[in-house]
Structures are given as structure tokens and as C-alpha cells.
Image (cartoon, rainbow, N blue to C red; front, side):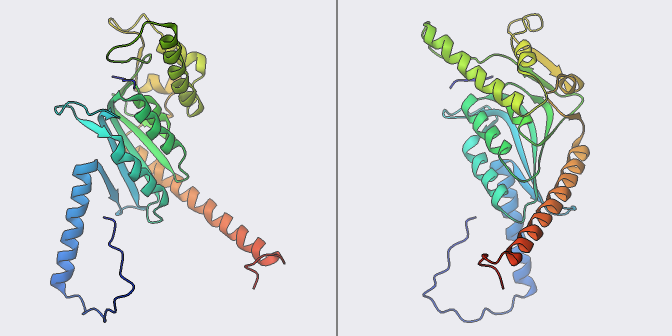
Length: 276
């Protein structure tokens, strides 16, 4: 439901350290075990993992339950904390060892501004990104799903599109209605800019009164979300990973061509500081 809203230790340059003794098998095993424990801790704490056994190294990020924003959710709720996800997205973008990002979504929605903040970060990444909606990508999960450069939805998954809603006390004044409208416009603008659906079509889905009994909005299942223009394709995990690998190949090829072009221009430009 929508609501309103292991950094390595720095070496001491002054210390003189002699050559380290060679690592034996026991030390190597301990390091491998420690690395495995760190990966497990990252998985349990933040719901993410880095996979490096395939063609490329990808970061898998899960967004599940309720997206927690400025206020803590009840302890019995499963949540995705946006303050945990934001640093991960920055790390993926800046880490040269990570080639792409896979986002797995099964969320009921949550805090609007937190969800939009995460969606904006994903949409602004240079590296290849793919999202896969599993189970549900409801409410503010819709912008998160379309934020990736390529989006997939499982055939059994669904997405609920509805107007902005808020919990708690509100003032029944025109300014409140205007604020809700502006908030809805922000969501609509982001979704339409990052998918194939038009603003008018999205608005009709949001304001539909013929489908939900106790609410306003629309529930789209897998193929329907594709036909509406929200999601690119119906697919499975293997489809999403294959697509991400292909995008990474194309991205690396383009980056290599650009670097070669820059080198040729640098050596050919008499004013370039890199001229030999």
C-alpha cells in the first residue's frame, strides 16, 4: 500500500611493514570461508548477492515486501529498507568488477518518495539493468519495475495501479487535493518516460472504478502488463539473465569503441596533453 509520505581499513602510510609470509593452504581456506560468510551476511542483511560464476559478474538485488521509507514499518512486516538499497546502487554503478544489475521484485508497494528515489537511481545508471516482476509489483513497485533498461514479468505475476493514498490525519482543504494531484503527476511522468504506456492510458488504469470492489485502480497480470506498455516482455529468470548478458556484451563493445575513439583523437590532436 502506498503511503505519503566491508569498507577496507585504510593502510597507514607511515608504518613500515616487511614482506608478508607466504599464505599456506590453511590461510587460504580461512580467507575463502571468511569471504563466503561475508557474502552470506550481505545476502541476509540486504537481500542482495553478487554472482560471478557466469559469463559476466552481476549484482542481484531483491525488492520484497513493503518499501520502508522515513518511518519504520511494524516488526512483523517484511520490508525493503531504502537506506540499504541506495548505497548498493551506487556501488554497482561505480564498481568496475560488476557488469550489470538484476532486480527481482515481489513488493506490495510502500513509501512513495522512497520508491521514487530508488527508481530514479536505477533509471540513471549507465550500466545494463534488467528487472523481473515475480508474484507482484504493486503500487510504487510499478515505477521500480519500469526503471530498468529492460523489464520482464512472470506470466503469473500481477501489478496494481491505483491513485496516491495516505494514512493518518489529512486536512480537507483544496491544497491537499492539489498536493495529491501533483504527487500522482510525478509518478505518472516517471512511468510514462520509462515505459511504452501513454499518460492518458496510465491515468485510465489509475482511475478505473469498474474492477476493484473496495478501491480505485486496475490489476494487470503478466501478458496484460506487456500489452498495456508497462513491461517489455513476459519472461522467466533465465530470460532476464540472458537479456542482461546480451546487454552487457553490447555495453562493453560500445565502451571499447568509445575508448578507442578517444585514444585516436588524443594522439591525433596536437593540443592534447596525452600526445606522445
